[in-house]
Length: 111
Image (cartoon, rainbow, N blue to C red; front, side, top):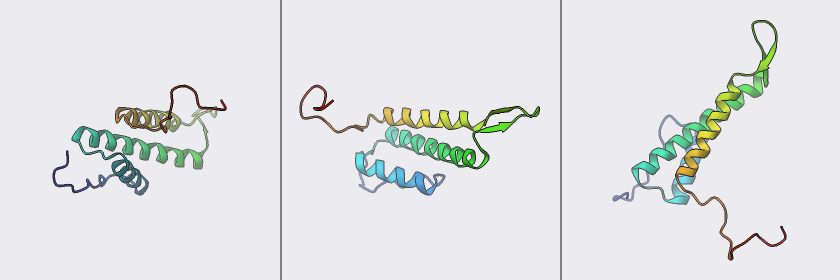
């Protein structure tokens, strides 16, 4: 529990988008414990890494030529996938309620 009620600042190594995600999740879900803050930092760092990979892949293309001239998947596609997985795992670890609650048990009407 944050006894001085001073909101934690986003880590300096995060991008602007990562800091926005940090602040949004921190405020929306009232994350205050040290373990939760560490998991949140991991989530935001993984998000930044994923976005960086996506930018490079968008510029260089999904496939690149190897030393023999054969096309292969861009090496950063693996890093992008792993970063997305790490981000999602961190969100799961925070045990955030990402779906709206239903007012009754069962499937929503109309499905």
